[in-house]
Length: 231
Image (cartoon, rainbow, N blue to C red; front, side, top):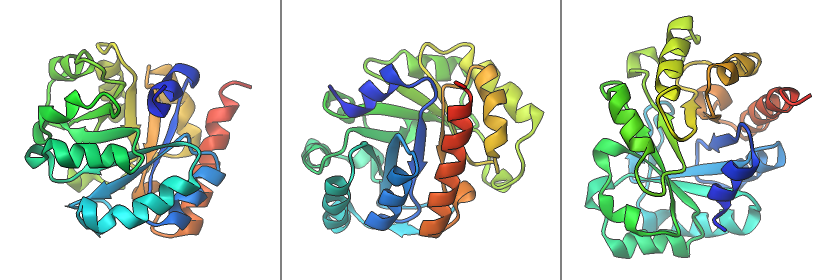
């Protein structure tokens, strides 16, 4: 079975780590400290970290090294989006990716044909709750990311208003809603998100910072908070 699909069948509240650089030490820091999945990027300038990632071919040697070191699911943000062709999509599978993560507004439907890549689709601030629900109902979609904070709000503390928005979206969805750390979400706020129906969290540069130690420390803290939910 696909690792990402299996993860959501086994875990109540998965912890995904979006590593700030496509390097093996960042990926291992995430895995060794409790990540359920790791996500990398291609062909994009990441808005929270400012890091520019190369093309799939340019980053491929790093991805091969990371895949060999990981026992957990590994996903990719295919930055070229609507311009992807099947050859590159199949190359992602060959490199060991289990899932892809992409904005619904900038990804080709061709990628949905590749059954070996599990879809984690992402809705944006201007998408409606109805569009989010429709995204969740698409064939094979495993989960939906709520990328609903505008760039000028990145890094600010989580508010009750944010939580209401997450609750409104999750209540209409047939699949788990994943909240990314666009806001400076703290581990102790995880229990409240779970109560609102959120189905998992993806921590990135705002939570982890840009160092290997930061990835390790943040992953460990969020892992402990999630594990405490079951105790």
